[in-house]
Image (cartoon, rainbow, N blue to C red; front, side, top):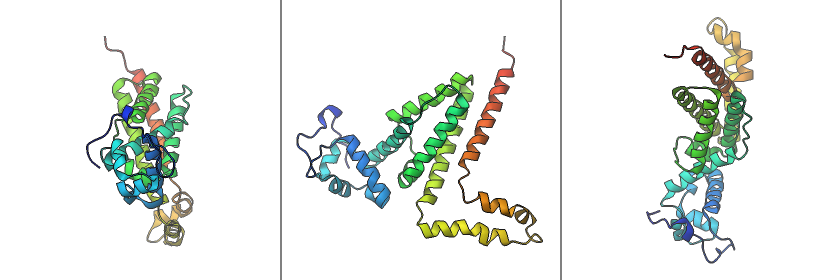
Length: 240
């Protein structure tokens, strides 16, 4: 794609595509997201996307400068989908837990797109809304500004990292996922205590726990640490 994006007010096509639909940024993003989940990153080509939309590939330049611009829009759409399902209650810890779990679930719902977009900074409307909302939760709980940013950073990076990690696993073919899950029982659970005492002592827990995502536990540890930091901040004497 090139650098000739048309302003939003001038983007709407006067005629439908060959499939009878009118192009829009939302439609292009939704179609690209579907193609990525079906075919992987290679789906983000102007030709394939135009074919799926029943439109001349050149018409996509009216909406996005290049495929990376489209990728940022996809990343922002995933954020938006999560935010639309999140209803803060005023309990900062419960609200962050719920948002984190929804972000993680959203990544698993679109694993290939999540792997491609987890490390991107979009600067778009939904990401801005998310940053504002999370900082609002933390500042509203009483975290000083520097602490609020530090915890926001750790919370978001942890969630995105687990989303990408677990999405990459989810995107594996079924037989490969099953083979990896079986390693804990077939290999680790059979190691003798004489050579591997710690693994042998915890083998049944490893077999039960390791095939699952550790994100919920990691999120809880982060929230516990954040609450401890909040308590410490509240106990500090106020500077005169």
